[in-house]
Image (cartoon, rainbow, N blue to C red):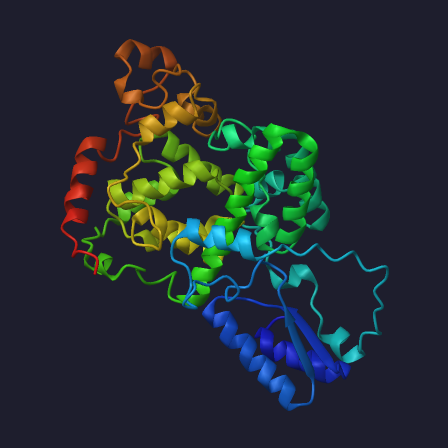
Length: 412
């Protein structure tokens, strides 16, 4: 069906004679408002309406400070959640689901998937997404979870920041769309940790804290509904952002001249996903090297990530910018060259996504402008032709950002 979702649901209820409607809760303010209005309308017609938590370990109102407010520091939030809230075991699969006959009136209005024109065709830009996510369903989610537990959990604590190694879970899209629940993931990881020894236990602790950040982000979104649009720290309203469409476009296309940044953005465009360490570097570059408003980056990620999440996306961008709750210190400015050399030491990640630099060795691939003319010629790289010159010089951009950030009003 095509149309306004609440209106279409009401029509389905009317045409089927349904006596009850059940759904999983949503937490962004526009979604909450829409769901509340639909619930009120259905109840006024005598329809039973019940909502459940299908996407979080804890509801945003269940882990609060002693004064009853939301936590604004992750470590305090996660400590309280681990201490006070046991994660319920997942419910077993139903043995059977009984389906009622679909009324003809609804069958006549039903649209084939292709009629909704959701599939890209002219051009078909989604081939890379299909290759990266061959089974975007419940079966694929559990296969991905099993693969993570058996091949990567033991390495997670030490290698999770390495984009050149398959150490992360890649479960975020499946969590985002409900193909697997965080409770299922939690208990599966705990079970693997207990059976797998010290390395698995360390990996599990680190991984579960990442689920904790997801929970913390939803708590922030619920209690601060403008998280995606307004600076959490109001003093950042005075930030002198630059209006530079050309630089923003170069960033979006992975043409900044910084190989790690460009690799991440090209991975994003091709697969709909980006390694978490690289997300931080890419975001820091846009905000602090280019002085472009974090909301432009948040919007690009929302458009391109297959795991784009209303809470995580906004909270993470504000964290990098320094304007969020429990944010990174404003003076933390990632050096993309140093980050590349530390976390992609052989250049394998860059070579995969920036193939024009394949011929450079590990010493030069993260800063090709430092290579000698002979090295560039041997690698077949012409800076400014085959690969762009850096948009900005790191030291100068860092100094400019620090000056702008230091001039902001002090936090009250």
